Image (tube, rainbow, N blue to C red; front, side, top):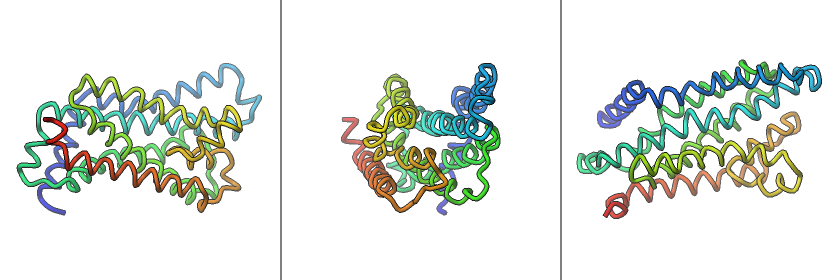
Length: 242
């Protein structure tokens, strides 16, 4: 790992720790998970659905929101702030490549995302039992796609005002796709090929889930698309700013 990349990773960690707004978004999902559990306990959903089914429902609701808020939104805010202050152009003049910059963006969101992938099933009481490997693989792939999705959105933002305008719709899109997919079979047939489709199919019935499916291939296509657009935007950033 080059000294430039190490320095950028360290700097991003310091920016995250120093920005209270970003820290709030990183840790807010934990409080929301407990709020969801409390709300469901008040209306007796646990007795009606059963503990295991309720845990799966909470997992299906909490994971997309947790990843979108704690991983995605901070990416957009940090990128918009750097672009507004012309830090990206300074880094490019200093010899930082698009690949190094994007890799530095991936590290901390990936660590935060893995934290929520591990802790969310524990908080909601979901029993993964023999599904730990498939759960980890599906969620890691979904997290990677979300990181590139929010990276792409962040690179479109020229300032923090634009970032605030785009971050909420982007977060809601990632959060609501699994919810809409469960509303009807027709919606599921369409949304199963979205960038949240693999996660949605997995959460519907993980005991009969097969990784090698149309949803998996669609996710790979989305990943390549978001990554390709992100690299393109990073390489042509000066043109976009002119």
